[in-house]
Image (cartoon, rainbow, N blue to C red; front, side, top):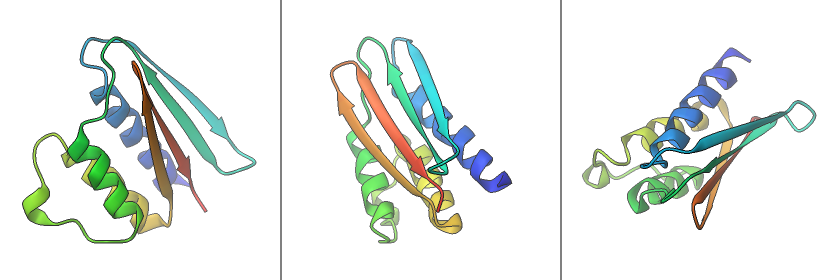
Amino acid sequence: PRSGLKLLLCLIALAAETLPRGGGIAVAVDPVAVGASLVATGAGARIEPSAASMLAALGSGAPPDPASLDPKCVGAAYVGRLAGSIGARIGSDAGIDRVGFTLRLA
């Protein structure tokens, strides 16, 4: 659906934010599972702790605390709210010089 594509594009922008020194983003769409996976790799790749917390809170269905919003987690808050509005789920995991995201639309 169109809203799923919008969500995927916003998730790509969020993945780009995890690459402070550049790198690459690999996107794999899985039409069978109705979802996608993204892996951002590059020197120093990491997700900001506030962004990871925001995604986790929104993924559990909890509304975000407005006091916890900061410039580093606004993208995550938007992606999480958009996902919630269409019933999608977003997961994230991080390793050394890599950040991964999963998107499930149904």
